[in-house]
Image 1 (cartoon, rainbow, N blue to C red):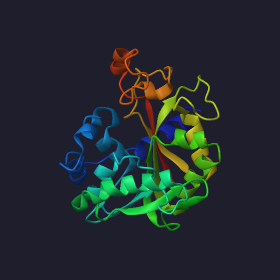
Image 2: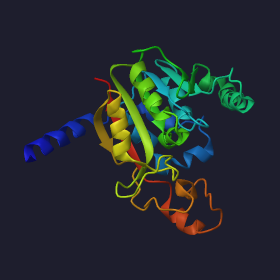
Image 3: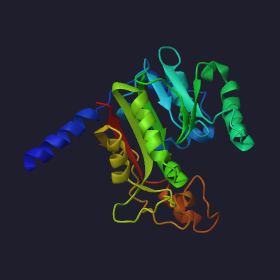
Length: 267
């Protein structure tokens, strides 16, 4: 048993090694980044996180559900010269006007800085059924940051569809990197992940169910001050402060959420 545990530890350790990347450092420290986003580096550790996933500047990389583009500001310039970035967005032809407006808002952010984002390709991601962002076996890396709880909340198979789309689009040996708010295993996770926190075991099981192998874990985005038991869930913490001034000082002292950082590989 001791030999088995040691072997497993060595596998995880070898797969989580990082290397110096001046281009990535330049993208993280670049003037293209929004000042409010830079302030959050202390909680999100973008250089260390992307290095752990093994990103390289010549890769074809997908960012699923980039939100307002926090990581897109780093990935786009980093991959611009020698790689390719695909960012998923809403369907611009969706029948729902609010969904179309969401697409337009994100596209306008990209169009506002062509020197940074002009080579970003937009794909469609509306799980579970409307997902079109890359051909099968065509990309080197798929990344998603703090999105799994949103897919669980949809209650329509979105989690499985999202993970399956990542698996299908990756080349053999490609990496699926996931960062998510972490729920302690001794606390219950409801069907909608209504607190915004998710069991690490759930994410691992879901990834394995579509064919991924766990290649490594990192605690770079861990926060031992966060016990995931806040009124209003993860959104009570910064930067959202969902409870407004109620207990705000205590939430500020905690900082942003405790997060799992998981690296999966397509065999």
